Amino acid sequence: MNVQRTVIPVARPVLEEAEADAARRVILSGWVTQGPEVAAFEREFAALVGAPHACAVSNCTTALHLALKAVGVEAGDEVVTVSHTFVATANAVRHCGAVPVFVDIAPGSFNIDPELIANAITARTRAILCVHQLGMPCDLQAIVDIGIRNGVPVIEDAACAIGSEILWGSSWEPIGKPHADIACFSFHPRKVITTGDGGMLITSNPHYDRNFRLWRQHSMSVSDTVRHGSATVLFEEYPEVGYNYRMTDVQAAIGRVQLGRLPQIVERRRRLADLYRVELAAVPGIAVPNEPQWARSNWQSFCIALPEWAVQQQVMQGLLDAGISTRRGVMNIHRELAYADPQSHRQGSKLERSEAAQDRAIMLPLYTQMSEADVVRIAGTLASLVAPA
Picture (tube, rainbow, N blue to C red):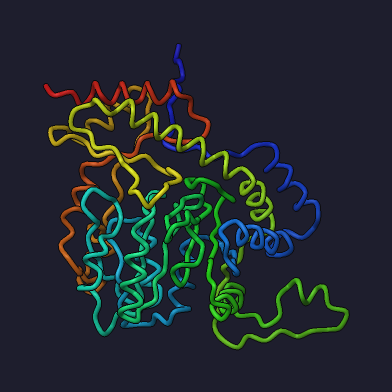
């Protein structure tokens, strides 16, 4: 007789009856594409992060593409960013015909090293694209200052960072409040809140926001909602090439419910992360992630560095054999076949810390529905697997 093993997943979205009811309501309304629910989701998201403008799109990759296009990134330009991130960050740069310039992550961090950015800037640099990796805020103040000094716009890849906070001056403020020029969020199921898939662009610049709304719907001059609600016949125009980057009303309705859950989700993740740190504190050689004094993570992921004597794949296999799923450290884009062509990118610094992080780090399960007993079990199993021989 085969007994099915219960495996602890790396992540699990919080989707319950309220989300199903929201989707059902929209489906039965007859309006399921970009419409009133998207508009409401945008208003509520903007209010949450304290921004004047929020524009919903199909995913965070399309958000990054529109953000880069809005600040003027074109073919032949360069964008300073990290290789140590999901491939979508650099792909969005290449969608503009531009070249990503990779710099290393900071010591003891999975985020971009601000000290390396300035030396990577050239006359061709049109943007700095920083990433709040795994939900941990990067040193945004230092990066914005570099952007201002060099006259280069700063875009935040905040795909993982909804609910994270940063100390700005003397105030704790949410990631997404406009400090940089544009911030881009993701609602993929791997994130803290989800709409199935989806993205959001945040800015204080009304010109950028107008362009986002134009470009996301094929550059249609009159939106569906305006045309259908008009008492007179309206003919739309298409003044420039646009894209089909719309979010649906079904997704937005789910997102509105998810926004209401966000405080409780983040609070729970922070408690679980604290417990991980306690349970792993005495394990020799393991480096646990810690928040800088100016950052509060949403703990989208809990990524540890293994001891030097441990073999990443062997440890991950041991955990999987024990019914615990993990993921390897964050990828390095410059190592991927899609970026093997020397013309596809430029290295603005050595990438030794980025490569070491990919090779020696693993992401442990972390999600709202986990129990404290799950964390204790995972930490104990990991400790036994990395114990020196």
